[in-house]
Amino acid sequence: MTDSRPIGVFDSGVGGLTVLRELRRQTPSERLLYIADLANFPYGPRPQADVRERALGIIDALTALDTKLVVIACNTATAAALDRARERFDIPVVGVIAPGAQAAVLTTRNGRIAVLSTEGTLRSQAYVHAIKEANPGVAVLGIAAPALVDIVEDGAADTPRADAALRLVLRDVVEWGADTLVLGCTHYPLLRAALRRVIRRRHIAVVDSAETTAARVRRILAVNRLAARAGRQGTLDLFVTDAPERFSETAARLFGETLGPPRMFMIGEPALRVVAER
Ligand code: DGL
Image (tube, rainbow, N blue to C red; front, side, top):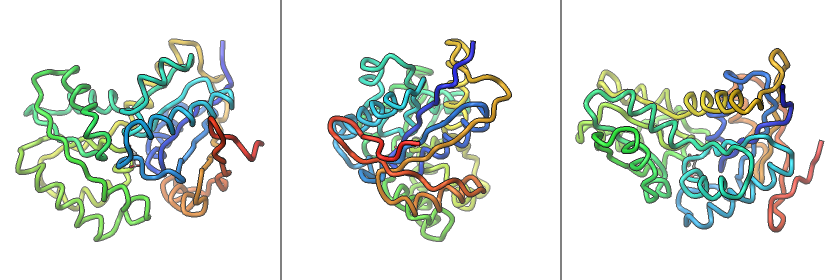
């Protein structure tokens, strides 16, 4: 049995594209819908209840588009809304925190893991819980790095501005003696080049949740017989709630190809309403 319905993926901006890229690689036959909620960017400083409401609204809109599975490609929204989403919707909802935590626990040798995230994710303690669930003996240092989100969203990920911001953060990580650094915000993998420059020869492994999240999606599709027909050519549709041009530029840079312009989503009550249906 195969299922041709799409998979819905969302984030506050371009960050979730790092997960989307991995999904395209690991599930190439799937139809993917991506929503960047730029009208409400950034999620990190918002109260959890606000982020939860936004996230549930977006998932509502995605289910109205007949999605068979949703990926919350944002750590802040995963921390705020994953549990509630699983209660409310009867399709699989996958977050990015547990996959990232598991990748980190498998990577660390000295049992000291630093997690870079937004303030919202740090406040939720979701990484501490997920890492301790996988291995209670591991010590976790949480660091909020909201400036990095803006740097990425401004298209400055590979600039001296990024290097300077990362250098500040890395000082704490090195001082504390972490051997593993989790990029606990989906925007941060876009800083990989700058990170390499700043980390240089230090022995710090950098992990993110893109690959493990996509692997989890692949498994859930297989177990629940939800996968698209193998060999079918997958598709990608992009939506934004604001600033379509800026989004297009970053997306094209990330994927190394020109992707069609994103379509606008308008906010309607109680959920987002698709205004440009294909
Ligand atoms: N990319 C998002 C995350 O993983 C959040 C960025 C933001 O909107 O603050 O947490």
